[in-house]
Image (cartoon, rainbow, N blue to C red; front, side, top):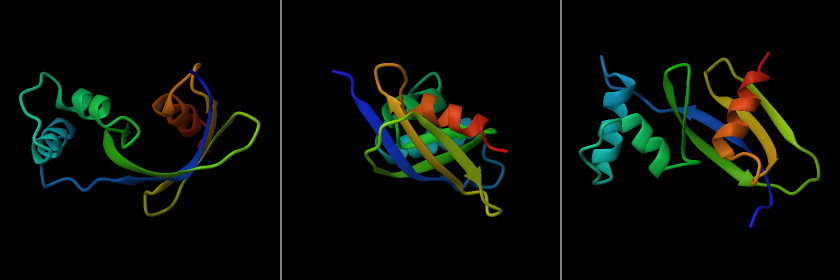
Length: 110
């Protein structure tokens, strides 16, 4: 069943080890959680931990959010000087999901 979802929160960069690629970072995080041997560790991390992680500009972010109730679609985001991205999204989950809503919000960063 579809319903409205409204979240406000932050996307915080996940620290990378020196010379670590995004794919290697995702592999390390999956291995830490006991998951191994995938063709694409980035894809697997984003699928398995949907709504926990998001990739923006080849950087991995962790999502910290809280649920809010209002009536209209909202896709807002802004980036602080320290790299943290603040977001507020509200969407009908039958039409898009959390990652799609974050993508729309990030496109609105000015």
